[in-house]
Length: 444
Ligand code: TRP
Image (cartoon, rainbow, N blue to C red; front, side):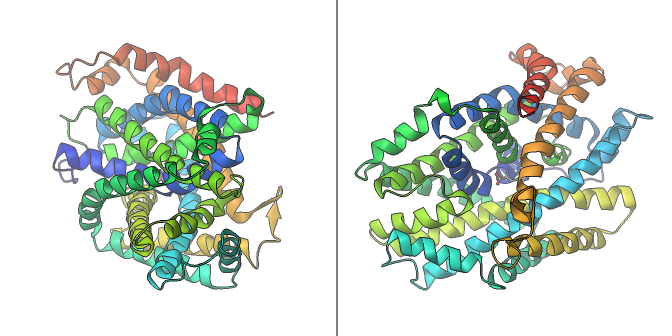
């Protein structure tokens, strides 16, 4: 497959995968999921999931992608010819389009807040007023939908014009800046009066909070944040070079992703408690808390613009990676041109994304099992389909693939000495699939 693109440097490969992993999942979803599900207990289970399921499943996806240098469907056909495993690819494609749809709505909110910040709308209000502001914007009959559509069109342009490289270069430069900015926000939040309450909420697990629902949500969050289970990292690994170390890349990605999530928590929760706000606010949490923080800072508007801009860049590298799953599939398995393949996935996301955008307004009454379309897509994809994908990949690589091939991939044909290989293989074969299954069944 020498005609396929490869990441040119080792850093490029890691940076693109980190770009996929770090996004709204860390900064928007992690704080509100933790806030709704007991804080400390949730975070503890989340960390355990990253370690025991996350890293082994990342490595499993990497093995399949790099061994074949193909998209998920083609890779499965090549590694397990004659079996039906490649049908699994369809789950990945459906789930990735569902995620792209609701994710774009939140990217649209970020755009609205970026504009608000630039125009000075994010200062001089009380926390309650910021709450009302978000509620009236998100329930507006067309504004959120407009931003969602524009965001998806921009995403389309980036993918079609091959601007991806450019975006990745920008993101490689901006990720370290995002990290520094988060650090500054954290320090600022930690100095607020009453910040200790926020820390206690995050790090003192109350055992009474542990329940099957909390475990399922923490597991879903770990998979979502690491871009796992849908063959997203598999697709990226198909562009890795044969000399890249899969285990090292997986560890770096998991570490950086988790660090960003914890920093986001440290930025949000001290402020939540300091201002007597509630951590259970749901998807609107950061949009209510961040303005209050900006207001406290010198040059608050500048910080606000910077943070939303960086968040925007972080999210577009994530949506690019999600879109790539279905595009590579339509292109390589259905023979569509890249332009057509990109158009098909954008049109689907435009329809579903618009419906999700209306979930907070005109379509708020349309619910399935008590969830709006936005929450339903989020719940089904993150908490059910991604972990199911995790079981699939760990079982496929741990049990169905020839172990020689797996070990060759992990050690780059014996040229690397991977000390953690045995532990990793054990987690991949037993711990990850069993733990995921146990968490699933605990829900019943
Ligand atoms: N991990 C990204 C985030 O945290 C979201 C994401 C990108 C994703 N690609 C994915 C989630 C594939 C699941 C599957 O924002």
